[in-house]
Length: 168
Image 1: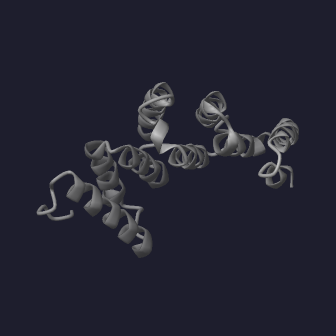
Image 2: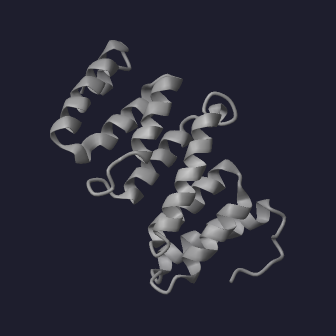
């Protein structure tokens, strides 16, 4: 409720943050709610803090797939700042996404999130490689999800000037 009231008076965003911080203290699995709020309504410093909350979340409590999804959603809200005030944080995120993709090489969800991240930033070579890794995984059989990844791969390839190449 406090977050909704924040659209009328910004002081309610601070109240929402305080309440969510208290919730996250009592229930650490809720920490990403704070990150989501800061990423949505915060200034640059708070957005960077939110992104770090994602990358520093305890993976025993919060699945890395969820942290990655929240980080991507936060960045999607601030594209005009990617090359400016958020460029340092994006550098850190690049390393984090590469690390989680390496450590979780058997997780198609982590690979997919990593592909989405690099695709969003326009790093099409990395995105293509990750999309391809997802499609090549033996466990990745859901036809709807395969179609989504193939579509994303085809789009990335087209943007990268490879529209004549077949999808493998």
